[in-house]
Length: 411
Picture 1 (cartoon, rainbow, N blue to C red):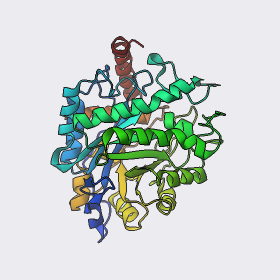
Picture 2 (picture 1 turned 180 degrees about the horizontal axis):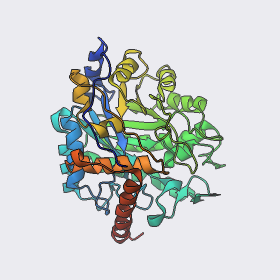
Picture 3 (picture 1 turned 135 degrees about the vertical axis):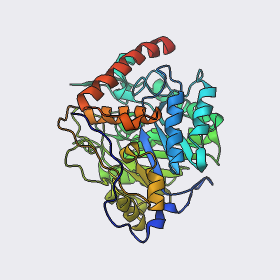
């Protein structure tokens, strides 16, 4: 059985201090975000299969901008086409279609919103049909195999990130987010589960942070002092032997000594068998506020938490309590692209989240990805898929794009 969206419903009285959502936030670089609501990074899977932006993708972010967000983040934008998360990713490389990127940046920045690409590298989790995965260390476990990076491979990374950030600036984006969370490459370097290196990039948390520090420095040098640079980090890998909260706090303290403008707190990985907070039937959010509150004491950099915000009151309470400076919202804004405007005005309530009668692995993620496609095509009123159909459509589309990716990038 499918799921048919209904109009958002008012579910509670709003806090008298709700105007906290409307307060602008000035970042150290001088960029001002007009309110405290961010559409967090999601892999929208709307690239053309050759790393380029599309009209549908531009329309999606235009809708969130018109819907009132201060900032939208484009998930999983690659600087190196050899290690993508999926074949629908954008690639900010030498052959990028700047015209398409400029259209995306312009339309996603409507109404004074900011639109930033999230610069990533999937590393050991690179999409197998179009990649030969490399991570900090070689791994050979069920569901995950990769070779280890050489010192030459690591030496090339700062340039890859810096070039991607420079292209983003040239295309008219207002900033970038460096992806160091969710088990992708920079997160892998931070995690002792992935990183078994014995050189200067492995061992202590300070050594595991070294590449992150070098990437931040290279990106800042490429874009200058007045361009926004955010970073997404894990509060924990949620895996035995992975990054712990105490180590993540050390990461926050070290980030405090860099030129980062905004720290986005999340958690969990896509390591085989890892549980997803958002896909759990009993998931209750927000997920990472306690850690964000601890992190705020370790840095003067603005902090955002992403994960599990489902109601306006949760966002208001998180900001009122001082735990965070920004709230990152993903799936709720996929359900209602005008959610920011509704919450800012208090004129409407919270989205009604879908429930499903089955729970196939990857089904919920695929459902939301196809929901984003419906938003991009202005047909969400007719969107009704069960999880199995969503997975089938999602996988079929990716299979076709893999062929285009291989031709475009000769991988």
